[in-house]
Image (tube, rainbow, N blue to C red; front, side, top):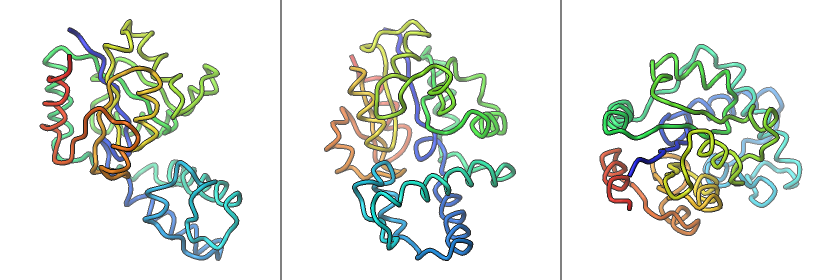
Length: 220
């Protein structure tokens, strides 16, 4: 049965965390804020109202600063392209050759995403894309809501049962489950196997993209 394979980008296909770390250090130096715990941010960035990042701020004050850093990453690093994880390119090409339809659902804005896809010449591999910009254009909620994954599947004429969501965070897994899609968590990005398991990931890959491919082909 044909399937739609939807990917998160940062932390799943793209090793972008080192760029975030460097931009965070610059931001801290400029704002004179205390240096936060980067491991805490990596684990809980999706929930800044719940996790204390060691910033010396009230929880409700963390979110604007976190968003400022992510915005700086997108705006100030246009000439810096994060590397693809080892094996990612061959993996994507293998999926396409085997007849899978590929898509992207990411919180990254459209322009920096396009820069990455064009740099690696992989834009043609993806038949549909949803970014943070689409939440405004389409009036859709971002992860962990299922809106963008469902919208992508509908556009490409796949049912939720024919859709697989692959990502490195609990947000990706929660989105996939809410959309009634299959979910595969990968542990080389932000969240560990325990977090992904607790989120309900149907399958988890901890080694490499060959493991992800095996999981995909084992799905009903």
